[in-house]
Image (cartoon, rainbow over all chains, first blue to last red; front, side, top):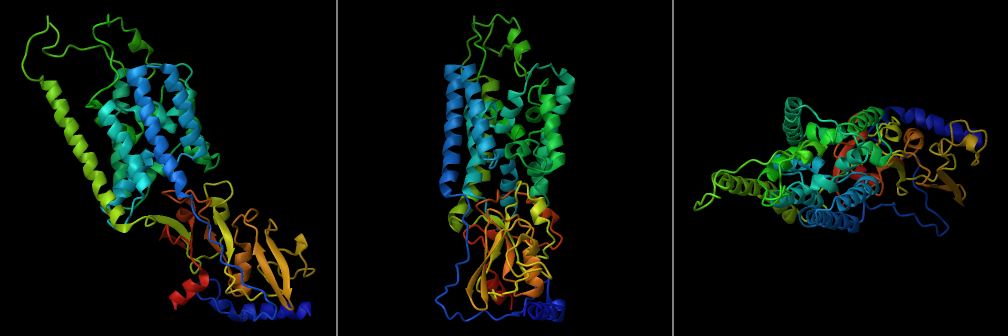
Length: 285
Length: 195
């Protein structure tokens, strides 16, 4: 009986082989009429992430940005910022797998603007806009302690070296080139390079292609002696944010009246961000 | 002593103007997207899916996903199933016995359960916890059966990457984007549509 069934199945398979494999599937065995009260199981649909998680993401992003603003501008607490950094690394990085992130959202927004049939999810729109709005008001608080990519580089930083000024200036152009390239490739629906070459997402997910693990490890290795190399010399969203923060309404500043221009803070900043106070025309004698 | 001056300094003025311009640019970028979202309603964003009529069961879904265990799983369209006693989605060709011994099964993880319904019909149910999305059963069912088994991206697992790394590799170009509120393809409905 078994042999005959097998043979029949094989013959049927061979006869129908030319039509098999591709689009056309012929009903070789008509669905049975059950005599018992057997009922066909439903097709199992599994829903995506519940929208609750998406709301949690957005609420936590807003809360984290607000908390960072308070910690930086009013509390001026380094420990607070460190706690925020680790917490955001844990949530936006390891729990949520580094996705959605505002850096990648650049591409969705670009494609959304270029192609009217491409609908950008509301969460992505908010993730793209909120850090920009904060940067316009209070500077790059997103980079400071919310971004998981920045945080993972911060936690491995051991002994920051100074990047020589001209080199830093030259490398500082790279994010803008990367930004232009990413927008172009996304808007033409060619590739989403920021996501493909995100060096830290393999760590967040503990899975990914080998070459990206290697790239991520290389970045982390450099991060031990150069403060945040990805943020400063690669990140395209950082480039957009830098434009916003340059004209921010309020930002972290050295209190001019108390400053004795000793230059210690300038030396201490691992990212070479602090410059000597300059006199504004008309404000100082 | 600070120099008295009326009005604002040149730098402050430029700052203000640039700030305004950037704010307008950001709002201008977001507004059309928000407007479209409002017009289209929720669930219109796109998610990845596999068109079963294009899939060639090459097996790369199991290996190319960024997740350790692929988001692609085998699903069963029971409306198409012949409930075969000798199911070549379940059995290896030429099985030693028609029983659920591991040596007789085509599934490398034993994710398919075979259950007697009534003579001569058997029901096959996939345990998605075990399924790795290799598509071996799909190939068997496609070649010798009705093609009721097929691969789908499971949205409880899929990260919906901007760049799906399976889609980038797929030799049959079977990956499509569907609106999130209808993220699955039910194969028999898809085939009716195809006719």
